[in-house]
Amino acid sequence: MDAWRGLEIEDDVLQSFLKKCDSSSSLIPGPAGNIQAAMLNRISDDPQTTQQFAEEVAQATFERDFNSNAWKWAEMYIKHHDIVKDGDINNVTHLGTAKPFETIHIVVCLVKECIPNGLGDMKLNLKDTTGSMKASLHNKVLSDPKFGPHIGVGCVMILNHVTTFSAYPPNIYLNIVLTNVINVFAADICPPTKELVMVTPKPVIRPLKVDPPNIVEIMHKLRNPFLQIPSSSKPTDNNNNKDTSNTME
Image (cartoon, rainbow, N blue to C red; front, top):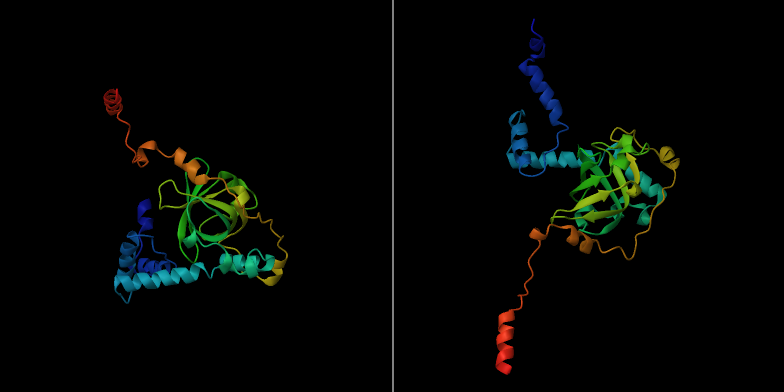
């Protein structure tokens, strides 16, 4: 028998596999998510409108992400160590309110996508309860024995004193280096308990600087001059100046 024939799968087995995948499926952000929703809806037993199906998948994804063990660990960890006001995770800085070229004191985010950039660093797609944001993760974080092994899709990161940047507004990115990482909870971590959280060491939280460097001015100098808005001021016409001086004489 040819080797490829061993890969043949009966239709009923394939349909069963797809149904199991649907229970944990997440929609791709943007217009591609509508196509994905339509495809998933087509193979379901009870097809709905694409909009209704997409809303249900989005709600199920939200509940799955923010009821995961990793997110529960972050909630209990922040409360136990009183990292933010009242130990309430809702008092951290949310991605949906972040502005370009600012330093965020505390942010908690779920990793939805990891893409190596070929230079040792990694591009991340982050998410919290208010929105999503892309990030650049430095290779020293990946190579750190404490944090690196836990970084992957579904993990939750607690970050401190992390900087946002925007080369092309309104797109905002986080620049994550090793000193920004307080803790990382792996996607497959066990359920948190009070006893487990109590034995975790208290993290060192860097206070937010009152006078951060003028990052806007620095980034403006680094941008391509051809992409900058030309000045509205008009150059001085030397010929007119000469004519005026001659008339006065």
